[in-house]
Amino acid sequence: MVMVDDDSLVLDSLERLLSKAEDIDVVGVAHSGPEALTVVRGARPDVVLMDLQLKGDMDGVEATRRIVNSVDPPAVLAVTSFDAEAYMRGALEAGVTGFLLKKDATDSLTAAIRMVHTGDPMVSPELTSRLISSYIAPSTDPLCAAARRLVEGLSEREIEVAQMVGAGKTYDDIAGALFISASTVKSTIRRAMQKADADSGAQLAVLVAQARLDLVNPQA
Image: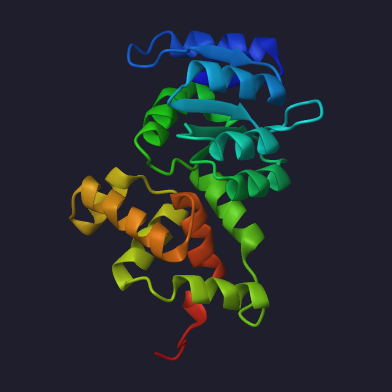
């Protein structure tokens, strides 16, 4: 994996955490957006750990957008903090696979990297609820209507799974709750993403929430 952060102390701390994981190799580090593009292009990692609030002319959101739009792109795990809502929204639209709170890195970094590597939408429940609430629009809003058009082809199970992703559940959590396999959860999410033209499970969850399906046929 490649780590991107403009703080060398943060990079050193993250690298020490990852040194304990035998299945995760750090193949490069970068301190800026332009450097990240160069390192990723040369190292061809499976995962990029991206600080969204990079200093300079290219922040982590723009770097993510360019990485995700490259040929055979890696998964991008965005690192953020609670006061970075605008960055979170931009990163979601840029195509990140997951979000990790900086304060959770000590306990969750390796698990988060493994999840995004396999395509699981790793998003902290705290971040998910905050992100989704920032997107919620009144049912009469044009954005809500547009979201409903995008998700109208989803099955009840696909909507249910997307809502559970939005609640911060992992694939294993969802599988256990619905008595299905984790691979079935993954295929359900991917099928729903294709139908709704979503780039990630997190984006799908936001789209379903924005559609305000709870207000459809409220008397039913």
